[in-house]
Amino acid sequence: MPTAIVTGASRGLGFALTRALVDRGWRIVGDARGAVELERAWAGHDRVVTVAGDVGDPRHRLALVEAAGGRIDLLVNNASILGPSPLPALADFPLDELRRLYEINVTAPLALVQVALPQLADGARIVNVTSDAAVEAYEGWGGYGSSKAALEQLTAVLAAEHPELRVYTVDPGDMRTQMHQDAFPGEDISDRPLPEASVPGLLTVIEGDLPSGRYEARTVVPAELTTGGAP
Image (cartoon, rainbow, N blue to C red):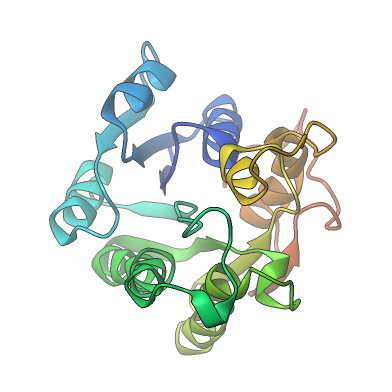
């Protein structure tokens, strides 16, 4: 049974992806900052090991890798933070908040990769979840977007340095999530797709034979959900 670490697994995209992977035969080590929400999400699921904590904490990252056991086939760096809400212009951006954004959205994913590398199987997948804000200049998105841009460059270099792995950034597109609501406080975001709409593309990246690189979840050819499975 292949093993994956998925951060931010209690809700949103992380929850939807974890559920799909479990259905396809994976064993998952999932985390989230909220212990109660994480336990509630996965109570009764024997193939999901929950480890509550903050990905910015080195001890928590070590605990995730230890919970995975001897071999890791997939690492999904999904957990991230938005920063201040409403989104401030860069001229007014609190620098301590910017440092925290980079700590969680850039440094923590790399740090988790560093800890996991000795246990990553040949051909294992690393998926770093990104955003179109990494490549488009949207007013107010300078903090979050620049952190995702840094994550994308880090991912590209990691792929060049580790050709034995498949290393991806995946943009899931706009989704109806709490983070998206926080980005648009007071607005109706019910027209955004649910996170489940991005899962087929993510499965294609995870279980397919695509080269390392950047992908948009809703434009890659979907996996055959009825016949596909874990590698």
